[in-house]
Image 1 (cartoon, helix red, strand yellow):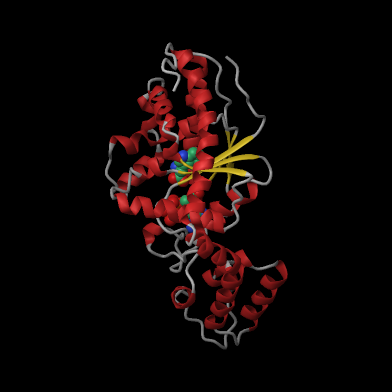
Image 2 (cartoon, protein in one colour; image 1 turned 120 degrees about the vertical axis):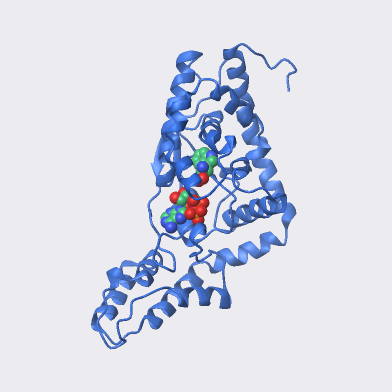
Length: 331
Ligand code: ADP
Ligand code: TRP
């Protein structure tokens, strides 16, 4: 049995765990969207993974559809990237099971993300523990070679490398060993200055607009330097967020205003608000159009799933053969 193995295949997944925020955008989404212009790219909504934290069908469905709308509105081109829901390719859970039988408990026990989630109060379900194996199956079932991820996910890609190596040595050399690619912005601050995160309730949502967005931006925490005094732009959250949107020249101009004194933080916040509004203007229009046409979005996801599933089936057939099974019913 032979299989088409592309030289470079990029894959990433995003959990449908709530509304996307600026941290997600600059830390992950933007890079996902840029990368799909450079090579073959698979991008999926990791709804199976979200079952480790979301136990409400309506929420999961809404979040999944939100993420699909967000990515498409922000520029993901479904002609270029294969965009799909993880659960539309159930073969991935079969591969995860087979991987679990060649994975040592010790490997999973070292997972930092599992320990951190438990510390945050998430239930220590078997699924949460097994999560890195499902992630390995996500990556390897499409025989992906490059995985863009945030810092917190690097260990999971390293585990994937171990699992692929172990399977290849035990049975047959089926899987390429994937590399990770670290996302650029590792820490976008939230409105309170800590890392922006849903779990801290300090986010600015990408698709917030009008009064709701203004309220968020105006509540960014700053120090109490009086308006007339010079201010340190490098220590200011408003400036850090502004920098994400601004050109070098615009950053320089705002930094000079901070240093000169006479500018209150309110004015800097207004500049940031204007930047956010301009930056996401087209995406907001596109999102509303897509939201009004759920059939179009659904067809994009189904089409992506059909393509992804064909690849997954080819891998699973090889794996079944290697471990001593067959695709007996030719499913
Ligand atoms: P949250 O912390 O809001 O739950 P997730 O953990 O779901 O966000 O993160 C999804 C992706 O977005 C990951 O790749 C993560 O690295 C990235 N990300 C999240 N928050 C930030 C942030 N404040 N700065 C940079 N990247 C972030
Ligand atoms: N675990 C990733 C996260 O929480 C999401 C994910 C699931 C993923 N499967 C993947 C990312 C495969 C990259 C590759 O962000």
